[in-house]
Amino acid sequence: MKINNDQLFDEVVLAQEYLQSNWEQWKQEETTRDMIISSEEKWLMLFGHFKENYIAAPNLIKMVKYAFCLPGTSKPVERVFSLMNNAWTDDRGLMKESTVKGLMTCKINIGLASEDFYIKIKNKKDFLKKVQSNEKYM
Image (cartoon, rainbow, N blue to C red; front, side):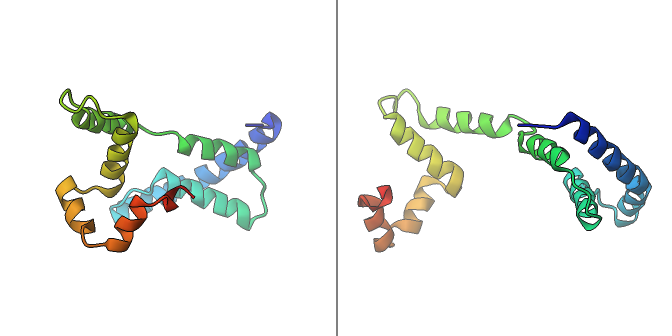
């Protein structure tokens, strides 16, 4: 990620001025609405203000995008490993990695128990035909 440090400094100074001038208003709104304004909303307000006033902040935007793409916790990864350990037991130790991957993909993305998923798709002939065909690889 290429960042121009001089420009970034100027962008941060402008952001700091905006945030300081709006901080008290946000605190009052949070108190009256009994709801916290998230950090994401505050960044969106800042960048909305920049856009309305034709203030370019490409370096700051890159930094904020990067920061928000980082996971806050390792919980999602730990959940996947937990599900994988539950599926890939000693009794099922001979399953191929691709089978375990398929099980995890279904379990994580569909959110249904195996029996419920079976009930949901057992009468969908078109869907089952596609699953069994090579069409999914094209």
